[in-house]
Length: 145
Image 1 (tube, rainbow, N blue to C red):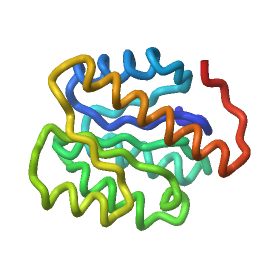
Image 2: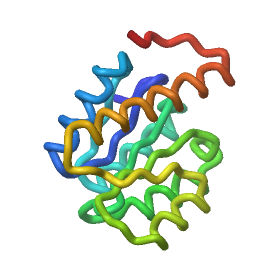
Image 3: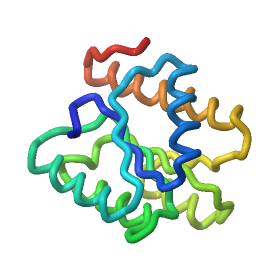
């Protein structure tokens, strides 16, 4: 179940999910992490959250998801009055400049996945920064470490 203050992660690679969780720990980000491992499940989950009125603090999307890709999810988020204002990070192992530009034009922060643990640790720092900024803007208090 999505709770306000959660991080929503759409990622099909279990190793990347693990590395993402470790990156959050290193940076002291304590948040309920919701993981969907394909785009169809992610879209269903978001539809339910929208109906329930719940909102995560942050969306993190892989572009190359099975069934429905990350671009479709990102476009859905931006078209939704419920989710459009929330920060989105797109993680991708691809190097396609057009993908980066399209994500950024939709207001997402694009980060290329590295292969090393240190690369994922840096992602944790970006997540912490975005969450801290969102909390300051909204004067919201959620635990961080």
